[in-house]
Length: 359
Ligand SMILES: [Zn+2]
Ligand SMILES: [Zn+2]
Image (cartoon, rainbow, N blue to C red; front, side, top):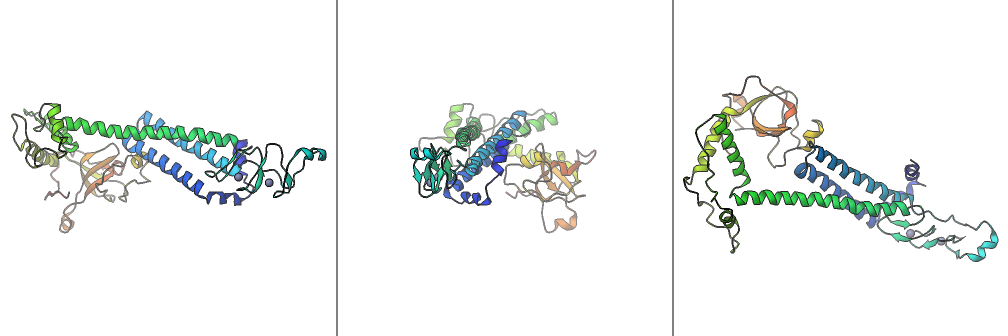
């Protein structure tokens, strides 16, 4: 508490001038960018908040930022402590042992030195630091050192998050390349299994482009010439499949989607904001990481959802006929807590017609 009081007890607001210098501007920008990036990165891509580890990780990141900034501002604004102007030793005969500073019109107390940047005699002066735009000395030696200790620890944590995100991305990419898939095709395959299971069909979906050998799959993407194999239109396929096995499955799923989409009623307005502030912290932080649009909702409207995340749904607005004339469809993401499932409505025939891919 004592230290905290010393932070807010600025001698005067002129101390804030210390911020107007390249040192603090660069240092604070780096702290702000690194901590914001690490927080966004870990929540959106690496360690989501709804897991215990994710929450602890997030709190730790906030903790580093707060502690780093606390010690940084402490070092800057509390400062090193200056020898009072006109200072003399208690016993005047001791002045014979001391140097005199003409600028401060005072004797230089033991361990103090005159700083030309601060234009004052600094108690137990260590050095003048441009990054805090102040001297490091008697009063801020501890906070300055703590800042130097905490900043790299915070950076190591942030670097760990960045490296793990990249590694996870690389791992996912390699996993699908070795199976000769794309992320979209993995999703189609998953839906194919789901569709077959849901209708208890006697089909088996075989992904047609997996050559059955990781090395063969790998060679389709990475070649010595640098150019990928083939012309991008026709693809080598495994035995028992034909060129259109995948597209046929896609057509089946598209037809199926209309039957299996779920109707929702809007119970709360939503502005269409990417990360809405008033729909709960989890909705805010788990906003889908995609360029797909969000749709504005108004209480009383109906939506046909085709897929969803824990806190978000994706679907089409059910438009009345007069509206359909001008706009073919309004489709996008919206928060789950703004809608409510319509009762007994897993089978609906109200799917919007005229399906046209807008992408
Ligand atoms: Zn001086
Ligand atoms: Zn100085």
